[in-house]
Image (cartoon, rainbow, N blue to C red; front, side, top):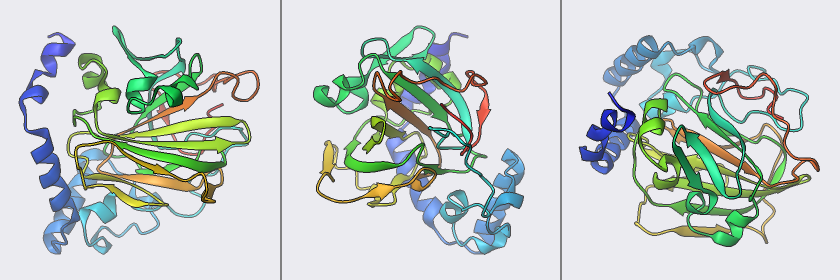
Length: 282
C-alpha cells in the first residue's frame, strides 16, 4: 500500500471534532474510571512510571495530569553540550536546511516560511541553517525543555489541520508539519536566534508554554502573534518551556553560523533513533 493511500482515512475523519472531544475527556476528573484508563494506557504503551515524580497511577485526578507528569529529580541529567535534546522521543529527521526547504520524508519537503506561519522575514533568518524534527510517542515524557539558555522574543499560534504526526503519516502527507496547527516560539541565545515549533496532531487537546499557559484552545481560526522583546522572559538550558497535552512533534530551527561554524549534530544521531531529554544534540 502506498504511503498516501495509507493516510487517506485521515483526510476523511473529523479531526477537529475528535480532538476537541479528546481534550474534554482528557481533562475530566473521573475518579476510578480515570485511574482504569491510565492503568490501561500505561500497560498498552509501556510507560515507565518508576521515573515519574509520583509513580502512583491513582494519584492523578485526570488523564492530562498523568500525561504531563513531572519526573523525579535527576531523571534527565544534562549532558555537557552546547545544545541538549529538548524532549524524550525519536528522531524524525535532522540536518541542513536547503535554502528554505526542510526535509520531511522521502519525496517531501516544506518551507521555513510555511512552518512559521507565513512570516518571510522571520523564515529568512534560517536560510541554509539547520533543523531537527523530534517525534514524541504516546509512551514518552511530554514536557519540552530548552536546548540552550535563551530569551523569549516572540510566540505565534498558527491554525491548521490536525493530522497524526507519526512516521507513516510523515511519509504520506505533503508538508505535514507546516499544515498542522502549531505554536512557534522564537528565542535569542548567546549563539544566535533559534526557533522551537510545537506541532499539534489528531487528539492533541492543547499545547501550553510556561510563560503563557494553555495556548490552544481557543482556536479562533486566525494567526495570533505575541511579542516579548520588551519583557525579560529568560530560560536556562534544560528548563521546561512547554508541554503537549496528548503528544506530538517539535521542530527546531537554527540559522547558518549558529555556534559560529554551524551545527555539528551528535554523531550518534540517526533517523528513527530514540532520544532522551538532556542528551547531547550538538
